[in-house]
Length: 464
Image (spheres, helix red, strand yellow):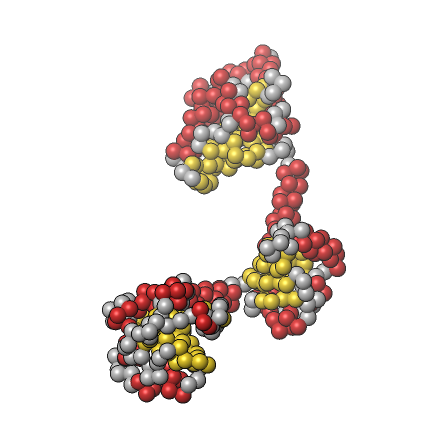
């Protein structure tokens, strides 16, 4: 019969034996040699004492020898003559030679063979005794180079080791779930610290995860499963119940793994404990809500601007004071403030604002500004330089509408001037003092009646 090498090192029948013939001198026929050369694995025949009787091109390419250098040579002495450490490898210790002598099959994995140039490679080989001798040939030897396989196995081992190190030392839960049985194929150790349950319990109970999801989030998890079965990834947040009775927030990101036919076979997921982040977010939300209530209750306007006058933040009260909305002021990049300053105040105020950044001095100014409706109002504006971001300086400030106070001051000044004019127009001397004897008002007639020298009047005025 005719033979062909199988993946297990065996020889399969191809055609009747009378087609596979030897020439009169014991060499293979051209037809048989052609068939052997088509086999990708190294193949040779050996006689009863281990000498090569024929070989294919794959074996020659693998070992570096020519056909003349192989045929008739002892296969052990040719490829297996020493060990990796350089020590002599006796033929009687060779598994192949022993199998040939005992007329039995042998299969050896991860034994190193040597090439003609002295280099070596990990090999897997089989030797099968023939039921009927083929000339001098008693055994057929099949030979494979395991270099690529060992490289792949080593890469896989390193990859698995790295994954194990990562999954052991990070606080995220990595898991692989069989969607057909809904059982875990893998879950990382972080599962235990996050849930309080052991990984063994998770492997044993396919419903454990669902059972610890808070009841009000069950529908969310069920909806995620439907989406996964459609081959789409999901990302969701929900609460679980820890074994100690507390609750934890989980962010779960899952990706489906599809079969060749497009159906979902497995899912790979990462579940992260985000309890602290959720709690911090809630604290921040409450803080922001409190801050908004405070801003809504005070009449002053808080603001943050950069050194170029561009508005980074301004509180909602600005619309009641200026008539402009927050959005309008953000979009204007400070132009509304600069262009609406009263001409008599603009130079002083802009210089003080610049000094705020250049000298790190406080900004404290009272000035007039025109509202959106055209009305002029007075503001008392205070600020300090606070921080730098991306090379730009910023200041935080607060201003309030002091228009009524300014109007009252003007009115008071007017009334005071009128009162003084009236007091100075009478023929009587007038002196007004408080309960401490301090002068509040004295008219010119008073000084004249009592002949008070001008220098004393000046001192008296200063004290007043």
